[in-house]
Image (cartoon, rainbow, N blue to C red; front, top):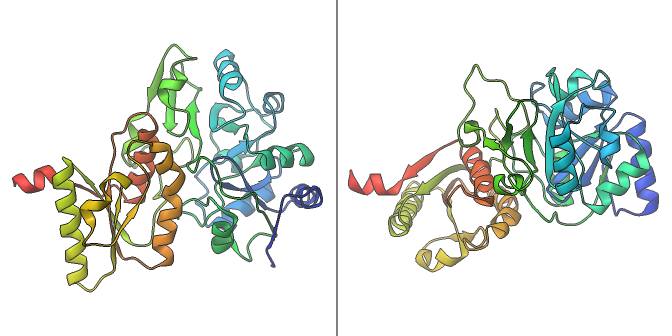
Length: 350
């Protein structure tokens, strides 16, 4: 299969809509990351997403719609969902709601719920309007790899596996949407993102954050949303998160870096912009500003993909407090590192 990469013109959007309605796949930009879309009501087409990505079938998908009215055919929308949609949609928010019978089991891994989202990216919105069908779409990357924030990232992973990629430029947010479970009495954040728990509390009286956000699921737990069970967002090299007081973090990162070099392995320290001078004697790369976590969210996946392109074998990465947008960043970093964390304070005290 030849993969075409086209700008989002009227003609290419019409082509993309025809491809989706024919039961095939289209990659397209959203404000968060690029998505790999199929007609959500066509079970055969949905299964093609899993095949193209190499994605486990028990990992549910998110269904993208153009407006709240379009979601009503897919799920039962309560007053909480209405309030959240009015405040944050279109935008980087996904709501997990009781599904209606029209949603194929392949979309939601056989769960009684379905995840729905209204993207704000103009290309995504135009595509949804033109095609006129709900579009199931996970991130448009090979399963487990860092999510794609440019069309070039998508082409790298899925060249020859999808007929069309709509190139809408670099994604603005850079992290996948916040997923909120509304199937229980207390709204629960299953995957943190750009809409933070504090922002949700401006609309809802109570919001809980699932404790699985910063830990792997147990064997007896079922993944209710994408990004919960499997190793996600991961570079090819071994990645270690380093926490603790900043001087000790810097010393620990440099120790890991030197040990990798002694073994003949390529290495890189991923650090906040403010801390780069401490690593002047090593290969270090900025993941954004600690004072502006949105810059970290925007850069993170692109940096991890660059490390893959360069074949870097060992990565050590600074961390930030899991608060506000930092919670979403630490969720992605934890899974990218397969929860490998070094406590620099304890190491020096040992």
